[in-house]
Amino acid sequence: MNLDIDTLSPRRSLISFALRGAAALCVGLACATAMAQSAKPVRILVGFPAGGGTDAIARLLADKLKDPLGASVVVENRPGAGGQIAAQALKAAPADGSTLFLSHDHTISILPLVVKNAGYHPAEDFVPVAGIATFVNAFAVSGGTPAKGFGEYVDWVKTQGGGKGAVGIPAPASTPEFLVKLLGQKYQIDLISAPYRGSAPMMADMLGNQIAAGVASVQDFIENHKAGKVRVVAVLGGKRQAALPDVPTFSELGLKGFEDLPYYGIYAPRGTPQRDIAHLTAAVAKVLALPEVRKQLTELGLTVGYMTPEQLAAREQAYTQVWARIIKDSGFQPQ
Image (tube, rainbow, N blue to C red; front, side, top):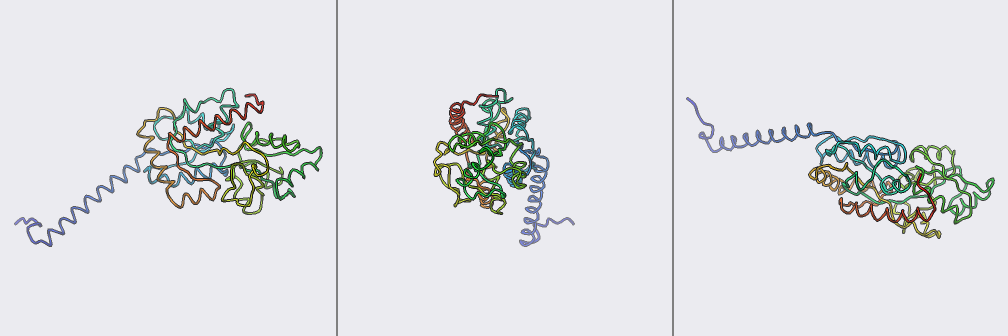
């Protein structure tokens, strides 16, 4: 005799309902797992070597973006030419939401102004996904340099042979290079920019006392500054940084015009479907809302601030206009 379990008793009916619900839940979880496993991996291009500040930010975001994107996320370093190689790689990448570019202002706003043919045009070849933070550049001295402050550094340079000093910069024709030039003019010392392929090799030479000073973002210096291996002696921007409360701004030291803060943004290739951009933007917003992510980015010297694609585009345009004027006034000719 065939019996329907639902007809035997109310208790058995409840058991039957629970079993069916559990089965449906298992099917749903299996489908979700399958979708996550089948989602195309996402790569984040970084235009600088592993070990630098931009790379550290990218790896933090990559780890946290896996869940909201439902896909694996990897960092791909394409160092060289101040981020130009990575930018060109983004331009050539499939516009399907699988390739992103984490960049700061140099590659997006500065390079197109100082290079005759950068091989990309941000407004035409890229689409903004989200802005993540602003930051400041800083001037630091190596552990072997006797100066404890920027004024002492200037005095120390004047005592060197010919009053000359080499200052490391992460890339040629960058914000740090223009800063070095203006500092030399203001303080009447012969400062020479020494370009590197990113902040990581520059930092290695500073730690080895191969070069006495360097200019880069705060996040490039912060860990070694805290460890006492280098000393950040001045920062750009309109106010002191929370991570470096005892370090004065260049405005305090009398150098004006560098108050506008550079930024970090995430970009995709032009032509990426809007639904993919919306999905990526929402994922970044969710990650930046996590307290542990905000804490870690702040400790790296960033001022965390989510920007929509529209806000990032406006920020990029405004910053580019500021630097177009600074570069023109400096007399620099595109190379």
